[in-house]
Amino acid sequence: MQPRKQDKYNLTFWEKMYIPEILKGMKLTLEQMLKKKETREYPEEKWVPPPSYRGAPVLVLEDNGVERCVACGLCSRVCPALAIEVHAAETEDEKERYPELFEINMLRCIFCGFCEEVCPEEAIVMSSTYEMAFTRYEDAIFDKEKLLTPVEKLRPRLEYLHAHR
Amino acid sequence: MDFTDIIISLIKIVVMFGVVLLTVAELVYTERRISAFIQNRLGPNRVGWKGLLQPYADVLKLLLKEDIVPTAANRFIHTLAPIISIGVAFSTLAVVPIAGESIHLFGREVQMVIADVNIGILYILALTSMGVYGLTLSGWSSNNKYSLLGGLRSAAQMISYELSMGLSVIGVIMVTGSLQLTEVVHHQAGWMWNMILQPVGFVTFVVAAFAETNRTPFDLPEAEPELVGGYHTEYSSFKFALFFLAEYANMITASAVITTLYLGGWQIPYLELLGLPTGVNVILHILAFMVKVGFMLFVFQWVRWTVPRFRYDQLMNLGWKVMLPIALANVIVTGIVILLI
Image (cartoon, rainbow over all chains, first blue to last red; front, side, top):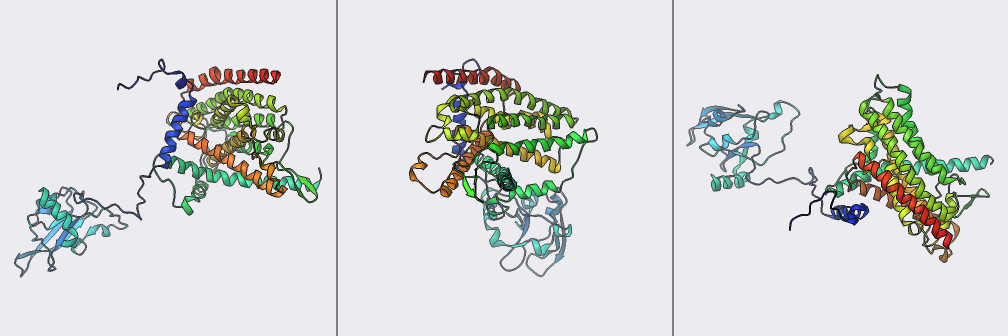
C-alpha cells in the first residue's frame, strides 16, 4: 500500500483537529513506557563479548606452564602502533627460544589484531577483555606476567580462529 | 485579623512552600524518568532509592558552579528576573483551596486555603501574566541576541494565549457565578465537574496552560536548537536553578489551577454519603487534590515527550485563529445554554 502523502492539503477533518492526533501519539508513548527497557546496568551486569571480539591481546600459556611464544618478533614487527616489545633468549625446551621480556603498551595498542594474525605459533591472541582504564602510565604497560593467560580461558577465541582463518 | 491568624497563615504558607519545593525537586526526577521510560531507557536510578535523590545532587552541583553575570548585561535586572519568575510561580498557589471543610485549631476555624480571596480567578490570571516579566527581562538584560529573541517570543506567546485562557475561564465563571475559587470547587460537587460541563473550555484552558508554562509543544522561548536555550542562555549557577525551579513550580501551579477549575478540586464524588468525621474528610480531600494534581503533572510530562515543538508561525496561528475563536464561541454557547435553562 502506498503511504498517503502527508501535506497540509489532504489532512482529514480529525487530523486538522490536532487533539485526536496528539492523543494517538500519547497512546504510543504510553505503550513505549510500559515496554521492556533496553538499558544494561553496566557495572553490575557486564557485557560478554562474542569470540569474534578483539579485546586486549594476551599470550597463550600452555597447560605445562610454558608460553607458546618463540620470540620470533613478528608481532613486534607488524604492530602498526609500535606497542609490542620482545626480547628473545635461549631455552632448554624443544622450542629453543623464549621471550625473556614481552611488553605490550596498552596505551599504544589499537586492537587491530595484526599480531594475532601474523603469529606463526598462535601464541598471541585477542582476548575478550575490554575494561582497560589506568590511573598511572606504568600500569598501562603489560608485562609477561600480566599477559600470560591459561589456554583454557582462550578456548572460544582459538576455536573461532580455527574455524574462520 | 489578630496575631494567631497571622501565625496560622504563616504556618500554612510554610507548609505549602515546603510541599511545593519538594514536589518541584521530585518533578525534575520524574521528568527524567518518564522521558527515559518513553525512550525505552531507565533514567537516573543510582542516587538514593531508585534515584530519588538525583535532583538534590543536581542542585548541589549547580550551587557549586560559578555565578556569572556577563559584563555587557544589566546586572540589576539580570539578577531580578529569576526572582520575579520564581516569586510569581509560587504566589499563585496562595488562593488554591486544597480541602473542603475547615478544621478547628486554637478555638477557631482554619480554612484549607492560604487566602480565600473573593476574586481568586482574577488573581491567578493577573499573576500568571506577571510571569512573562521574568522571562522577558531575563532575555533583555542578558544582552544576547538569542536570549532577547527568547524573551520576545515568550512575551508574544504569553499575550496570545492569555486571551484564550481568560476566555475559557469566563465559561467557568458563568457556570459558577463566582470568582472565588472555594465557590468554584463547591459548585463542582459530585460528578458536576467543570470538565464535563465545559469540555471545550477545558481543552482550550489546558492548551493555554501548556503555553503559559512554556512546556513543549509551546517551549519556543527556550527552543534549544534555534535559540541555544533562549532566555536563560546567560544564566549559570543558582540563578539558572531558579529558572528551572520556576518552570516546574509553574507546572504545579498550572496543574493545581486546572484541577481547581475543571477537575473538581478536592471533590471526591459521593464522599459525603459516608458521613466521615471532619478530620478524615479533610485528609481525603487533600489526598484527592494531590492525586488530581499529580495526574495533571504526569500529563504535562507525558505530552512533553510525545509532541514536537510548534514552529513560531504555527504557534501564532493556533493562538489567534483557532484558540481565540473557539474560546469565544464557548463563552457564547455557555451563555445561551444558561439563558435557556
